Image: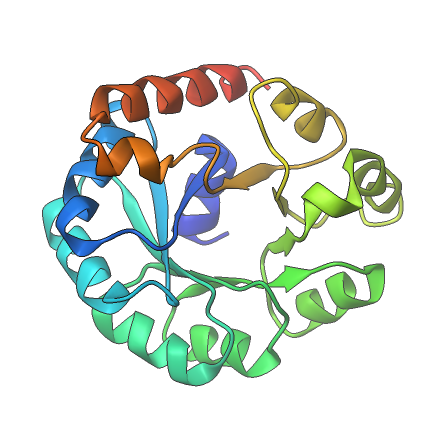
Length: 210
């Protein structure tokens, strides 16, 4: 088991930072860390993502694992790894990205939906998968696929909120990816970083004993 997968299974939450302006990024990351978040990804379709990843690796190296999200192809994987990303997360399954991660010792957690995609991802070398879009598929879907696919680490992404996060884990999720429900960009832009920290703390508390 890789160090990144160990962290994922231990901390259970990946904060997805998408569309943030560079000038707000460091303060937002610090606010999340202050709330107990240990894993953060910047999506590669965020302007200046690579520069932010590189800066966060330096600034928050001992406090949080920094990954890249929305890594849809090898070109983006190359950019992310060059910037120092410690893990790569995708909304899709691209076996070339998984192979690239293996070559460079980087964890890759691809986006999958169907049982066929999940098994295909594992055969290609993914050590965990991202079940997406969970907001549409629903928690009962996760429960159903968990039966025959019991041994594969799964991160559920989409639809997670404070009122239902426990249900995701009860249905079989090992971790969750969280975007706007955790990283409220309106609060960030308004400088309400204490609220960002408090929201993070609420989610961290919610998964602590799950």
